[in-house]
Image (tube, rainbow, N blue to C red):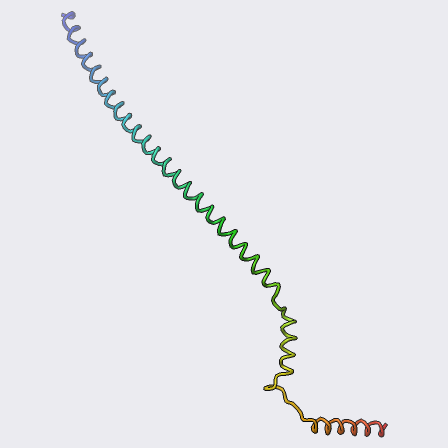
Length: 131
């Protein structure tokens, strides 16, 4: 009897091994599918990264151009500002304008000036006589 049981166990073991091999093949197929999906996703990420890198390089280039244009404008403004008057020069000009401004200045007539000069002369002479 032991001889009959051995031939029966062999096909069972063979079936079990076949089943295991098929399960392993199925798992391998799933792993391959996942690997392919990951590779495809990685390639898409690389493509997106290249596109973003190109866009960033273009933006950086544009910013550099804008900065150089601003530097040129600043230099032009500095050159023009050298022609501006300084604060002290402005105050001197204002003082001269205030002096000759007929609306705010009080002018005296020739007669008034002469009479004022005479008064000052008299007061000086009195001062000298007292001393």
